[in-house]
Length: 175
Image (cartoon, rainbow, N blue to C red; front, top):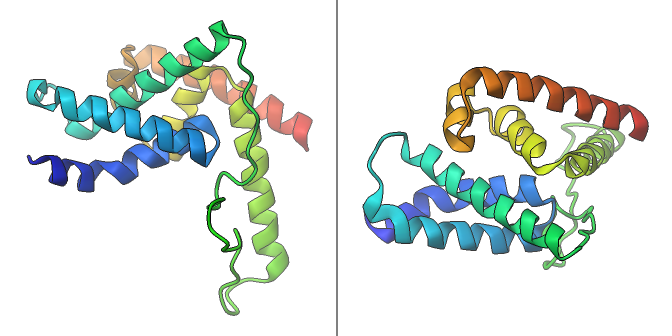
């Protein structure tokens, strides 16, 4: 697989995961670039023990965890970007109405809910956030999550259960 083919196939996947993990576009772009560079450098050594996408997810999650550890050791606090789902660099509005598909208040309510959920996700610790994002947002199987995080499938299930409970508590507090 050429570098170009690899990037075309995986760059959007990596960026979307990075955006969910970091919570803001700027950090997601940095993380995605870092993860893709690491993956490209390591691609010749890919043995095929798992799917290529699972391997790329693992590299992305590990790169993110490394950043979180480094930031914690420096005492660096992240701010929450509520523009995480819009393009902050463009002059385009985050919300663009689409004809008569849904009333404006319904779309705005969805955006508000997305911001509340993203805020709650950002309050989870790195391990809990990774498991919730991989399962609930990226819709990965327990087995694949185990491969990405280096955990047994049963461990993934129990940690996911606890992470969901924490997220539910955070969402109740936000409501």
